[in-house]
Image (cartoon, rainbow, N blue to C red; front, side, top):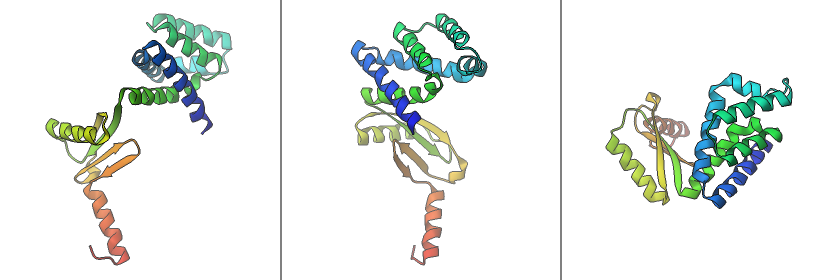
Length: 183
């Protein structure tokens, strides 16, 4: 829980800077890119975060990476600050919070849509449009398939879960029958 509080604080601080200088979207892309690089290159991540190496050597590696990337001065300073404050290990969580904060600032909601079978583009767009109308935000859908659902769809938007899957309906029916209720 403490890690989330720390990550949220750094994400909010970066957002304040981004709102002030109008670069929140730029920082969003840069932070996502750097986080993706660190996640993909495990050796690089270990070289920067492993306390068994001297801090000065890890900082030199970080500086070399930052020089190769075309990051804004604010983002480079932010990443250096994370390193100096020994928070570079929280980079992934900070990125998640920052992405959410910028989405909220821009009126964007992220949602997932899981279906048992492939859905047509028109159906996906209709669901996205309906969710946009209901939330009043622009909805970005992440679509995936899960044959275990048997049929129907499950949609998650924030904390709200809309489960219209046949699997869930069958489970609910089974529970009702166990309790002796009529279906």
